[in-house]
Structure formats: structure tokens, C-alpha cells
Length: 353
Image (cartoon, rainbow, N blue to C red):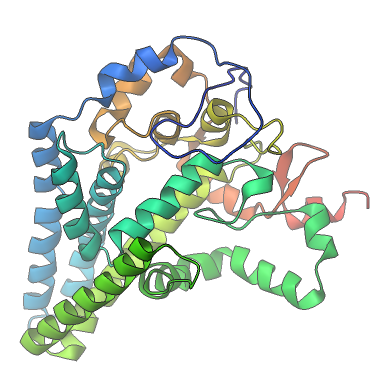
């Protein structure tokens, strides 16, 4: 299911990298190879908006109008609407990396607007996601912007109630049903006292703006009608997004290392999968299945990821997962350093204490 690579790498591309032990230099050339694909294109970005935000808003309106015809038709239209919601999320995601448009200001403006559409505070999410890029696959720096993952020994050392909570959180049924509610509607509404001022302002400002937007929509449509339209969109798009994010770093022989041996490019190439989806699903997911390219250089916009993969040799030597591999990966629960892979509950029980 994966290829073994030997390509150490330099500091994090486009992010503030936390302090870590110095890693050996990577195989030279990949940064120069990717440079042509890190140049944003205004025409392609506009095309991206026209094939994400515009159809999302149009189909959401159609769902509201169909409420007077048949709610079954409304639910049927919710499926492609959720797909365009995921594409809108990818636009916001690229704007957070400053890769979607050539202008820094344009990235910020489009990012804030699209973030509101997907119920997310732009600046706060951008910070947490940058930490994720800088620490993905690092066992000593887990916990921010990633899926909670324990080692076998860490799990065994927990009291029973915390083991139960971990099992609950790693359950596919919970992740794909309650997960969208938690991720999109609750967690993003909360800030910590220790957060920087700009992060707090981002969360509070987004909460206020969303309260106004939702109030206006409820006044126009009616609160029940608003929920009948928005709930299925949010749940379907959220479930798809959580699965995509999960499988991008949670597969059997994904890369995990302690800080002393952790390496940025190794984490990108071995710890970020190439999720090879059918063409229609790749379209709706905004090419994010080419996650190895994105983690190696977050400055490559979604509309250039496929070309970068196809034309860069080092990017074709990565773990490849099919959609079915992604479904099977949901069985994986704990990291076993002894075997150097993620294991199921049954496999974890067989690991010697």
C-alpha cells in the first residue's frame, strides 16, 4: 500500500516551523522542480470560484425553493450541494496558505468570505493549520490540527474512562455523524484564554458575523426551513471532509517519528497519502487527495496539484491509496512504534506489554 522513500528535507515551506532537531538535507532539486507550480493564476482561480462558490450558493437557493415542492427533492439536491461546499472549503484552504490568488490581499478577502460560507474563522484556522503542516507525523508535537492519535503504550497507560473516550472519538460512526457537528459548528466557535489576540478576534468576529447571517436567513426563510436546507449540506460536506482529512495521514504505514528524527519532507512524502479518487470525486474534493504534493509545498494551489504530481519524479514515489483503502483505514486506531505502523484494536491487543 505504500512505497518506502529516503528523501530527507529542509525547513517547512511557507510556514513557521517549530524548533526541532536539525534534519539532513533532502535530495536536492524538489524545491526547484515545484517552483513553477507555486505561481497562482488569476484566471484559474476565478474558474475555481465559478465552479465552487457560485454553484454552492445557486444549489442552496434551489434547495430552499424545492421545500414547497418536495423535501425528498431538497435532500437529493443536497448531495451535489455538499460536494460544492467541499470545493468551497478547498478554496478557503488555499487562501489560508496564500496560494489561491497572486495578491495577498485578494487571498485574505476571498479567504474570509469563503471561510464564512463554511462556518470557519479564517485567521484562527490558518494558524492551527500552519501548525499541522509544521508538525504532521511528529510524535512529540501531536495535538493541534490533527486527528488525535495515541501509541499503544500511551493508550494502555490511560485510566479506563479516558480509554473509553478515545475509543469513542476514533469510532467511524462517531467521526462521520457527530464529527461534522463538533468540527464545523462547535469547536470553531471556541477560543482559549491563551490564544493570541488576533486568533480570539478571528473567532469572535466570525461568530458575530455568522449570527447576523443566520438571523437574516431565518427571517427570510423561516428558522425551520433554514435548518431543513443547511443541516443536510453541513452533515454531508462535513462527513466527507473529515474522512478526507483522516485518510490523508491515517493509513497503515504512515510516517511517524519523534522530533529528534522527524523530517519535514519525509513526513510530506511518506506521511501524506496520494488518495487516488475517481475523477468526479477528485473534482469535488478540489484535488486535495494529492496531499503529498500539498504537504511538500503548501504554495502549490489546488488547480496545479495534479500537474505537479505528474511532472515531478519524487512525487510519484509515494503511498497510493484507493477510496476503498481509505475506508479500510478507518479501522486503524493506535500507533505501534515497535512495528512502525498504525494498528487496529485487535492488532494492538497482540502487542507485548
